[in-house]
Length: 525
Figure 1 (tube, rainbow, N blue to C red):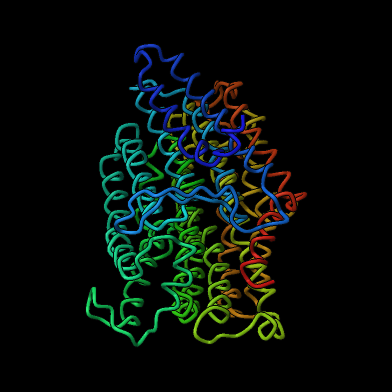
Figure 2 (figure 1 turned 90 degrees about the horizontal axis):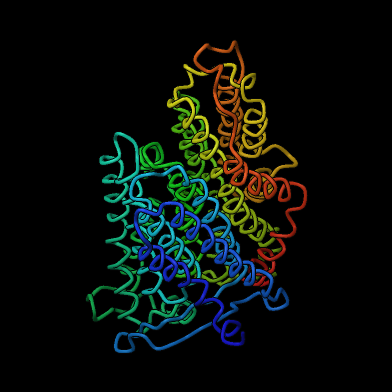
């Protein structure tokens, strides 16, 4: 037991990889065993993430569960993992969604063993990235997570899965190339890839000095590296105009693949901004915070209009992710603007900025961004699952062909409305607290951007009501009169999500308190 306690984070990171190996060694023709084993393993992993959550010490909201070992000392790269109040909620989210995604995949019949293996590998990649405190380790997990999702789309996706998986891979790899090059330059220039050390060693380099490695000024190299990081993570969020891979990937992915893509993988990009882009490049982040706010605004507005224009239900939900993640980007922009004032060359103190309320705004923005990342992970996973439920029965996602489904499947209709209202941001459900905090925090700094974003919020209501109305209301069409009811397995997937949505709407403090402690520490509170 002491070994587990001392190595809990590493066990949490690599246990799914071990579980994946065990699943891979099971008899391929025993689908029942493979499904149950994968689900049990995922629940065990959820237990590990809950143990981390319950063991987190709010009195010391900095990095905890730290483990450090020499790994590649000749280049200054080490195995360094830890968690704080920003990364821990993301680890918890991965722990929650993975078993639900696996249970949602019980209908998969082709090559079940490989499917479940890839699912568990993806969990290791996600949790490892959130825990990484070494830049090279971060990049390895970043790339590691690309492969399982590519194959999930490529092998178990829809009729255009080849195109969608190729587009997903190319977009992500394009961003990764610049990320890798910049990571190498940062590490070789400072002699370390350790992220806490880089906050001093890299940020503190004299911009006018020359880096012998590339024979360019530090300022020029930082500028190039900043945009490389920015684009890599912007693609993953995704932020407009880097978003075009997402609707195709979501539309073609299997249901559980879409749940994980929206619930976890999109959060990797937003997390990269919070953990790397802003802390490593405070001056550049502060200078471009206005641009980031504009891109967030466009994502909110255009994502809303694009979602409303869709008649494929799954594609509508896909575009809604761009809309909702735009609010996360807006919160990140506020945080970037204030963080750059504090830790960049301007050198303001927290007390000086707080005279204008800026530190409080940034603290609220950081809280709202992380909370919205978690909440969107729940509501988007729920929405994609419900679309999958009706698709399994109707074998279509065309909203024009639906109508009157509520009369036939009243329980399904009630659940769809609940999850849709959570996605909409109805007060009392989980979508409201994060978006409200972001909107409130951005008002003072990015007033006109947030005002225009309200058009996107209006369109959120429009596309949600369109999806509900076209599916549930109207006369019942003859082909839908005998649709089977939701199964116990399907209820086992959606009810935990609904309970979490409700709990975070009524009492978000159980999650927000952990986030806020670290946010306050980061911003000098």
